[in-house]
Image (cartoon, rainbow, N blue to C red; front, side, top):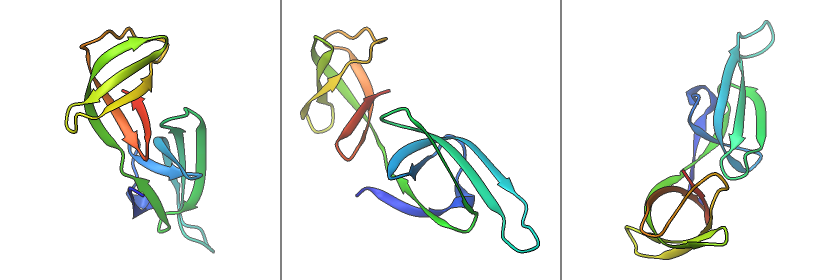
Length: 124
């Protein structure tokens, strides 16, 4: 799996983190002061990169968490029809099929940018 470990204190808004084994983009990060009987805690809220669901967790700031390595790639649309498009990766020349998001107007020969993590792909 393409991921690495880091401490919770090193996370920032806008970064990626694994929440419930799902790659998520951090939307909110807050910490609490250490108390009389414990260490400082961090509350992390995120939105799933590929499914859009909101998730959160609370852990000590020195706890280890997994950070996914999400690749940002370039592609060219070969064909687009019926809510799907054929995209050729501009590095490997591999052709993949992706869904077209409802709000996008995509035609053949458009260059696009997409995210990829363990076989999941999403148009940026």
